[in-house]
Length: 331
Ligand code: SF4
Ligand code: SF4
Image (cartoon, rainbow, N blue to C red; front, side, top):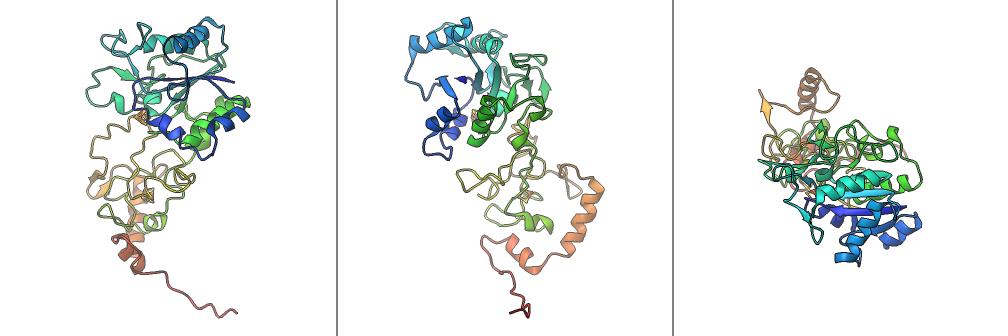
């Protein structure tokens, strides 16, 4: 399966993330799965005219293009010309290359939230008129348009995340290589469901603190970060705490609240990332699927039932009170 990877308006962090894949031999593993990179800006030896020749041959159809991967948002400015980002050595805006290649590719994949929804690059005043391949925030459209379908009939596959988890990219490519990613494998905004049908909250090491609404008050605290520190793990679609990064960590286990980087528009939450906006003391962003009245009732009940161990440890940077040992009487 031939894959062409282009970097548009992003930081390159999604490529860096992929290079942290937990395999001693990333390229060997991809080759074993019949995944062949025609060109990747960080991994390929070809540059200059040799690299442009690869792109030309894909556009002409001489080189079959199975997957076009785009990392980074698409810069449409100024005034729709795309000239803020010309592909070096070609005199042609990147958005033109992407449009022409997407028209040829059997599948088109957005790698990271920039390419999927616009991401960080489209934040603020967005002077470059950045957007995603098929979305602008949560609004369908983007560079290719809401009706765009790749040669396979699928919309853009949005492997969202800032950066994406290496497994999300590699497993998506493997599923495509095996012909096992159909429309039913994508959620409402085009994210592969194998990771987007989970919430970051699932498997978080702070779950016991969440149960009792025993909350962290400052960054080094062990408690749940939803109530005061902006954690959106109960609303963010991703399996970060079930599938740790680099075999070990996640934002929440590292002490940083989830900022829901897999969601459209995460870059502009309307409040500081590490603060929880509230009305009358109740967080505005309630857990997905949970009516407000239930949350208020359960939070009050669970706070009143919080064991001393959980309450004290929640605002400590290490375990102050260890779980009790209960004598069972069993031998
Ligand atoms: S999604 Fe995030 S990590 Fe990836 S290119 Fe954009 S800003 Fe960088
Ligand atoms: S810190 Fe966030 S993800 Fe972890 S338990 Fe609390 S709300 Fe859930």
